[in-house]
Image: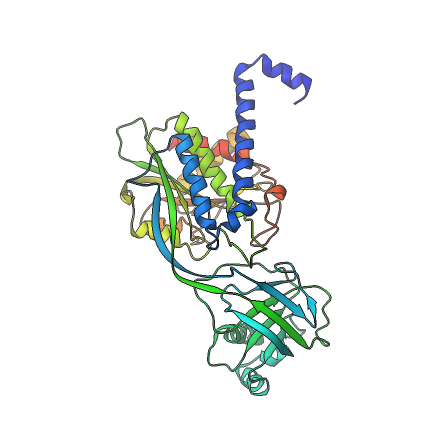
Length: 431
């Protein structure tokens, strides 16, 4: 802040207070993202208690802010199935070791595999029809295939569909006599999680400059562990409102991310979704001091990345009366904002969307508030399917890191976080 601006704020105590409040909001959000995206939290997955460490942090923030549990505990436990990679991970092509999560990704459903394997290089043309795949399997039975998955010239629409279907079969069909699959692509690869373990190892390779015509063998050491009944948890806290109404406002965000790929590589998940948790915790801090009219419930879900399992578990076994929810807002990917925000289900709840746009225009906060229709793409989904009025908001623009090791706290800009938070405070105050 320049000297002239600072002098002006001294003449305006309310402006000075607001400036300090915004600075505190920014510092708190950055602190939350930095903590949750740090190596100590193991990518907030299901290896080395990454999810439990994150849940414990959120619970402590709830208690520090004065939120009370819903029921006897801040936690709602449930089980999920997940394939994990807790141990050794190494991949070498012709004796050259590759960098995990930079040069390649292990498919999330891959089983363990160890050994050196001869490679057969094939092109997309060789799997461009059901017949060509069967012919290929006859010629390469029991081997590792490396597929050059860069699209060829002149592929017809029908061939593209067949290639997609055959590639899926090569990854998952237990009836194919195929030992393993390497998929080479020059496109950016993103990782995910899986609730199943497949029949064969699959590796997505995108290291530039590899000459596929000369590769001969691959050395693999991949330790996978399938957990059929892993106990994880949602974290729930509540703030009592000032009215006698039994209506509820609900704020949600998922805290889980992709976890570890081996002992040494973790996926930080700063934007996805430590930033959404920062929004949730910032709103909880604010309303713990500035009491809302209605009771507010704050829910941090695990299991989102593996199929919205935490929110599904909550809706199927709710700790609150879903019929009493006046409105729910779900936050995911809250860390940028250079191109504004997008409101999923905005077409369903057009009056609420219009309310957001009016507030944003009046106070000149974000560059855009864009509308989007129904999409079951985050934790709002099971709620609105159960009849709960719900929207999901995400920020747009800025850093493009997503489901990779580059989604880090130190490079997440949080460009519009304070203005975004201000908009949401005003929005909740009007509900």
